[in-house]
Length: 229
Image (tube, rainbow, N blue to C red; front, side, top):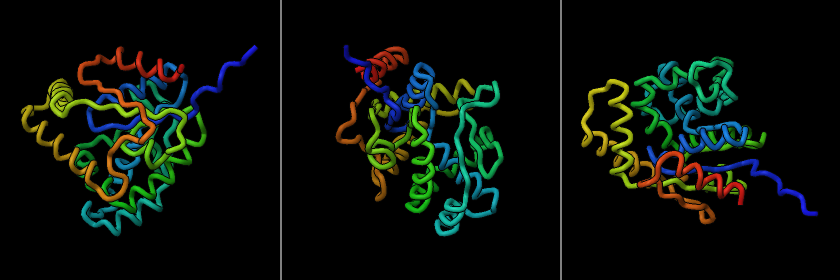
């Protein structure tokens, strides 16, 4: 009698901004009882730490030095305040602080620094090796965990992604134009895909899911099918 195979202990989900990868990863992790780990929070944490230290976001050398000195951890949520996880930096809970406008405005620049990415990759691997984790980002399957048990690359047209982000921001009460969001999305895509270190691209053995015309539940069903397969 054959035994059930070992479950996927590390699931990597990559893709461009607003492709729906974070929503998918969070739902998939909840369904499997895994840790949901959005690796983008690491760069937000480094950006926040730099701002607090008074380091200009354009000072790559000092930001990189700081990134290697930081102690960052991502844990299951400790409070029922809507957080999907705890983000701890040097012993301090900064889960909500990393979502500030100042961090939003500077995280793309900081995350493009090669040294910062190297520092964050080390920490991401340490967390991932605990197992039972769904890791989401832009270079998980290609750089952070090329040995992941399952690699998914969630994509969608830039117009569809901009529409989603536009609706999210309008729902939060922000006054923003769709064209402004679209231009910003295209700029972010260019930064992510053209950087020298770990450019955004699907791993050779990743399963590509196009969510342009898929709802959240449909995307989750397809991902669960791949996990079970």
